[in-house]
Image (tube, rainbow, N blue to C red):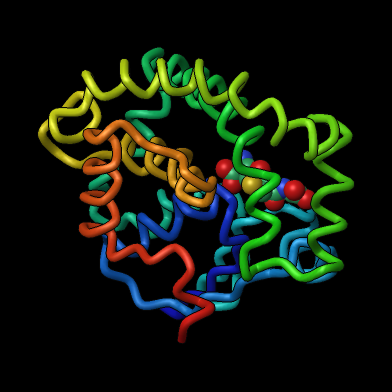
Length: 215
Ligand SMILES: N[C@@H](CCC(=O)N[C@@H](CS)C(=O)NCC(=O)O)C(=O)O
């Protein structure tokens, strides 16, 4: 199976797929798409949305569908897990965490190596429509950081050493992907247990956030 992953480094849905590919031991070609490049994703999948995985020249998107296709031995049990009421609650929980996480992370993501002046400007313009000026997000950082920290401390209690389980699961892929971008926020201090958890996920998934830039 020849695999090509088109992704944004910062995108949690793209990180989902990178973690799953790494955990399942796949070799693949990694293509970091510039955020202002509308043509590449539209030509591949008809829509400007990543991740896109090209499997033997056939392009597909939607992170969970992608993971389901590469998970030949059904380790992640995507169909079973994603149809439970628990999963719906978990998805709402991720969105709730994501709201604070993205207000904190976006102003800093744009100064990481996947962006240049043009793509930074494109991203900021697009995201400020929903979130307001990045300057204010940075200025009001405490507003997002305080409730998030409370949520992360509560989350620490559910890590045993994986989410609610002693076994790595799809939930860890989804959770770690959402939390990972916080490493980019200057001086952000994860609760120690969450940091250890993320590092464990990193290790078993052979994940290296910015590796495309150090090849
Ligand atoms: N449901 C999709 C969501 C993917 C998604 O929202 N990707 C974002 C990046 S995080 C995207 O490409 N958005 C288009 C844009 O921001 O221009 C999945 O699970 O793959």
